[in-house]
Image (cartoon, rainbow, N blue to C red; front, side, top):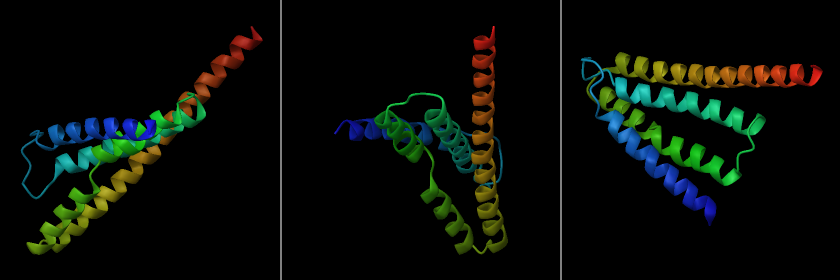
Length: 138
């Protein structure tokens, strides 16, 4: 039961943060360029990879808390359904090329963000282990 409370609480926070960022005017781009959705999904991809790498390799994170962050918060924060709705809207309006570019950019940027989050977390782990080893030698 506890894990559902963590997931629900994390999901509530993630959904509210997504709503705030989705309605925030970042820059004055054309309405076809969904910068907010791209930003939300890239941040979510990065944070998920970064958090899970550290949660499994360095921190002793309670599994229910880990679910609350990953499935709850990040799951509610990122927005695959909105991405699909926006791509579908572009297709229906006849913007086939732009819709495909938007989709490919979103997927590519998301994969790069996951990779970057994982690499950054691994580097933090290496530094931490190196500091621990050097303190044992001294």
